[in-house]
Amino acid sequence: MTAASHHDGKSVGLFYASGNRDEDVYDDPFVLRIDRESNDHIGFGRGTHVCMGAHLARLELHTIFSQLRERICGIATAGAAERVHSSFVGGIERAPIRWTLR
Image (tube, rainbow, N blue to C red; front, top):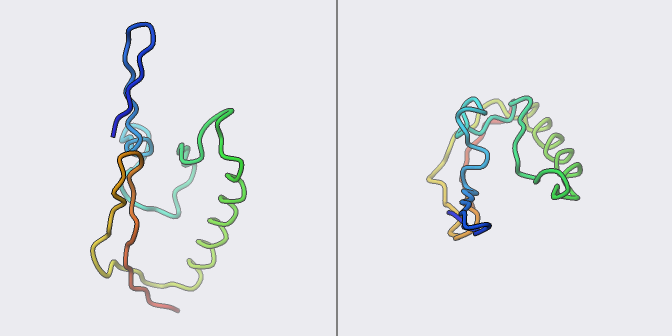
């Protein structure tokens, strides 16, 4: 997905779906890794455009994954992921999984 803007006769293309998948910046950019450290992603924006709820969201995600890591000893996909159909932001809408508890 691209969005073009014209300023002083030049075009700028924004590729939202590739924002956190730069192979030069991230190890395994297409793999979900809950143990990834120093993840300088742009999911919550930057600078003056940072999401006001970013700190709460990070705390909630940290808590959820910490609890899951203690309770789940195995996890696998249980079907194909269903992607969001949008012309603005891409992503996964539904991803069935199967897990084994300790």
